Image 1 (tube, rainbow, N blue to C red):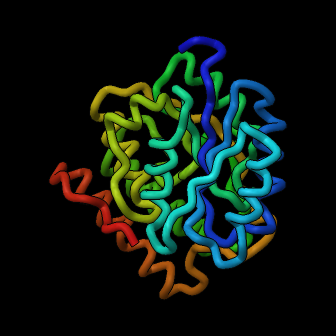
Image 2: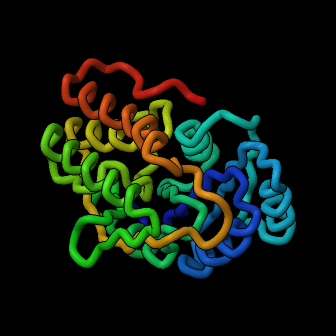
Length: 245
């Protein structure tokens, strides 16, 4: 990949008005050149899209894709990849739980691999989210995924990904919430794509409300599609992880 290849960072948003401006600034500050930011907003009622639109007017490196509310995370990432102008793409949560400062290392790693996963489970990585139920649930699901699916990936539910756009386009992103990531990474390794991980420290969101569950029953409801996806992927039955919401 040429050294000056454009890197498109996709930010799927829903009600992230307080975070989106500072996050765009942090992404552009971390990467500095050969970068564009693609905000994909699901008609956020808090006006996230309007904030992004105002930034777009003053900075041609930032673009906005507005969508109907309720289309969901995986399809937002898929639409962002389709809209991206770069040969390299990345996507991340928009609550500052994932550090924009890690993006240069992820881009550099794409010189030698096809997909880079920001992992909470390798090297100096850590999961420092406030909700210990979320931390425990992620560890259990990823432990189950590693045991059943094998390969080199430690963080199948990362959601912090950089990749060569042609690899993502060929593999496709199936519908769902976070379970799309399990399916994508498992299929990538099975298809022979080169996958690497770099450590990052996952921290509590900067502002706003979490999109994840807030109770044990909620975590069980949210976790079941992940387990189902792991089993289906292990069996290789080819079914979609979950319909788009």
